[in-house]
Length: 476
Image (cartoon, rainbow, N blue to C red):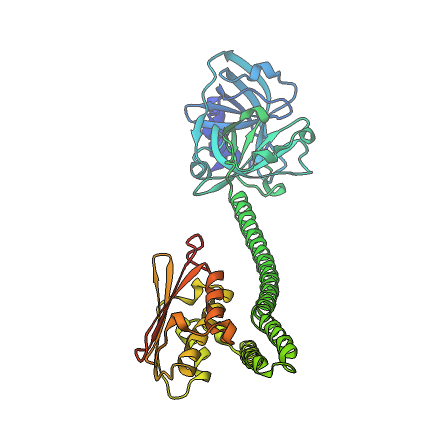
C-alpha cells in the first residue's frame, strides 16, 4: 500500500503536505520529496524546525544549516527539496536540504487556540498562539537553552517551550501565575521518548511569550499569611489585655488595701480623738470641780462644818457623775452601735441596756450614711442622756424617740410621760447635775439648738435641731 502511494506521489513530482505527513507517519526513510507551500513563520536562530502550509494542511520540516534564514521568512512561497530520514525519535522525519523562493507574501497570522483545542490534535504541525496560565517553569539539562512552561486553564493542561541563549541571566519563575500567550509550532511529540512531554508548543525565543495578565497580588498563600498574621495579632492583643487586666486587678487590690489601711488608721485616730475630747470635756472638768469643792471643804471643815457640808455633797455628786461618764466611755468602747447600718437599730442598741420595763418607741427616719461616726456618736450620747434622765429623774414609763430630715436640717425629739420639771428651775452644774449642760455643749459643737418643753406631771419633750451640710449630700 505504501509503495503504491510513493509511486503515485513520484509520478506527480511534487508532494502535498498531507502526502508527506503520511509518509513521515508511516516511518518510511530515504524517500526524496519536493513540496510547495507557504512558510508560516520566520526561521528561528538556533532552532532548525519550520512549518510549510498548503491547501491540504501543514507539515514541519528540519532545515539544514546551509539554507539561508532569509529564504525562510514568514509568508514566502517556496519550493522545498529534501528526504525523509531516521531522526532522534523512533519515527522518520523530513530534512529540507534546499529551498527555492517562488515569491514573497504577507506573513500569516497565527490562530489563537485554547489548551483543550491544542490537546485535541486539530492544530498539530501548525503555527498557533496558545493561551494559558503558567503553573510551573523548569529546565532540562539535556536540552540546554530551553525553558519549559507548564500551562493550564480551567479544563486542561499542556506544555510549551522556548529557547533562550542565556537562560541563567533571567528569572522566569516570575511567570508563574501569569496568564500568557505563547506563539510557536504545535509539535505532536517533540523529543519523543527522550523528553516524555508528548505534544508541545515550540516557540523560538522569549519574545514569543506575551504576558496577558500578571498573577494577582491577592493569592491564596498571601491570604492565608494575612489570616495567620491577624490571628497572631489578635492573640497578642488578647494576651496583652489579659496581662493588663491582671496588672490592673493586682494594682487595684494594692490600692484597696492601702485605702483600707488608711481608713482604719483614720478611724483609730478619730476614735482616739473622740475619747480624748470626751474625757477632757466631761470627766477631766468634773474632776477639776471635785478638787475645787474638796479644797473648799478643807477650809471650812474645822471652823464651820455646816458650811463645808454642801460643798462635800456637791463633790460627791460630781464624783458620781464622773463615775457614770467613765462607765459610759467604757461601754462606748465595747458597743457596736456605730457599726449599725440603720439609726433605729443603733439607738435601740444604745438604750436597751439602761431600761427595764419602759416602753420604747423609735422612729428615726434619717439614713445612717448621712452622719459621720463623730456626729452619730454625739447623737447617741445625747439620746442616751435624755432617756436616762427621763427614767432616773422623771420615772417615765413610756419614751418616744423621733428623728426626721427637713430640707437640710435634722430634727430630733425625745418625749416621755414622766413627772416633768420646770426647765428654769432645773438644777445645774453647781448642784452636781451635768446632764443638760453636757447635752447643750454637744449640740453647740454641732451648731444646733435645744428646746425643752416640760411641766409638772405632764412629761417632758426635748427637741434638738441642727443643720446638715448640703455640699456632700448632707453628710455631717
